Image (tube, one colour):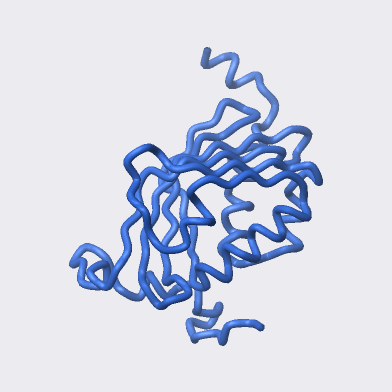
Length: 172
């Protein structure tokens, strides 16, 4: 098994996943377009037992097909979650697909902080992202998140900060 892994050509999935997560967090449309296949498929669902929360329309049951629908979905996502930050917590890959545990955090469009955790699968063919599935496993929201002694409250607002650490005004 180790030899099989060693003989495989460079696995594109982990590198592409890192680039996709960065592009989504930084709202880099050009970078996403370069990484994604024009016929990309995105499926987002929630694990049974995940309670309702604000902006559920963007994570409860979503099916997207193609670059145009992806742009529309991401536009809705960014509108609902204007300070969204996306971080990979764990990544396992089998060459063409990578399983990634992710954390989404920020402040929603009502000013409420949120944390969401999802198990995602990113599939890459010929160097292009062709399919992403995400199963939301936990969602937390509310002002109490700002009081968590294990987390710095600034993290919920990072999506508003520019590269210089200053707050960037939202684009219209």
